[in-house]
Length: 177
Image (cartoon, rainbow, N blue to C red):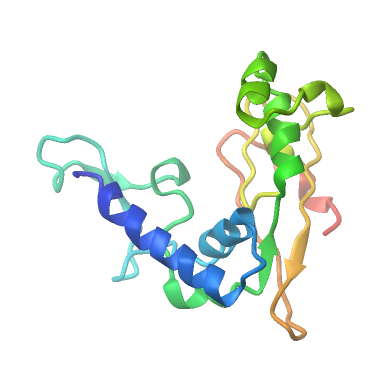
């Protein structure tokens, strides 16, 4: 109740239903992509999204939110219905990821009826075709690829922008986009 999740969940579910109505062939991953890639990164006054740091005096104990606090940001209902580009992952992508989790094979078999041994390889979370990238324990270079689909129905121009977290070098700035 204090964090707002109890009201955010039904609002986002309603927006997901509207996106599914407009794009009936969208997978759950494509819907999530449309929602997360069209968010606002600032509050309604143009300031940073704030995160509550304690339950005691919540209005007095706030600081600017990090992506771990706010996810992608505040949803933008209008923009989510015209996302332009989407990142999509399917069932097999999720199975490759789940089967790659150490010790998960019996659980995957129990819930899906599929044996992980039918897959020739697995993938990590960083390899899922999601709009965000998270790499745990990055201690060397790592290549991450993403595939986007233009659903705009017309030619559009896009530019890529990113910021590196503290402690990560920008040595990949010469990468090909």
